[in-house]
Length: 334
Image 1: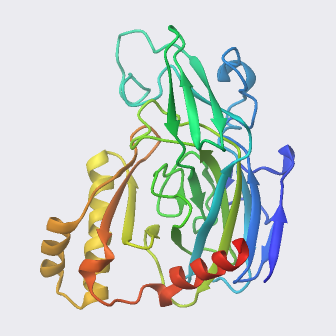
Image 2: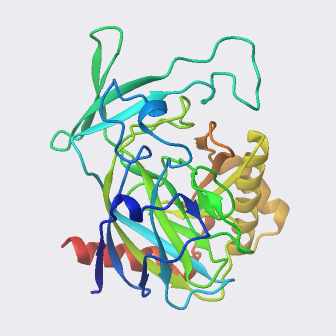
């Protein structure tokens, strides 16, 4: 088993997808042990650390990478299987911002009322209990919430030499902020440039669907990822697979367009996998599908279309990459 460990220093973190040289080169079949910093670069540590005072725009939402995958070319697909996602510290933070989030005026939804207060919440992370403890700021109320670690940001370099800020989700991946991207899930990303150039970051100890206030339980992570390459198979939008479901994503504004993109991809994918014509697949997905929300606060919004694999018959997905990578992950943890 080929295992590669990488713990970036602060000056090795990246803030774009594309536009940067690889920090390392890996072969398909590699297990990667990665450290990722939280979306504030570890600078917001307590309720007195307002991001506007301790962080510098645009150096937010850092990612670990990019990594060049040997043999990856445009038209291929990278498969990244998340073996383990573990909070790296015993604390995490969340915030509200002026002009950011789903329930406030923003620069694109201009309102006359005053902006929201900038406020920080600090969560206690207890790995032994598997909880993140919420503490209200203006009362003594607290409650333990179950940890469900995931990565808000994962993606590859866009095509045409484009560089995109890590906060923006699109067809290359990016800041999709879907809680579906947890351990045990394989994400499929279409390759746009030689090597793929994938990066991972924005760990969340816990996040509600939509990330409504604009931030989750933001946590540095120790993450284990298994890497595979599917040659000659293109992927138009990021797709996810767990043991029981297939998922398609879409990122755009307005939210209904993100919804349409994800549903269109799932319908056409289901048609391809089953041999059903488009309208038969459309009918099946309409009745058996789910639509978890990724984010409704970023520069693009993200929706997920989710379908139980059991309803699609005996279909092979990406040359059974999920099953192979799951087995590789199990070998690593045994």
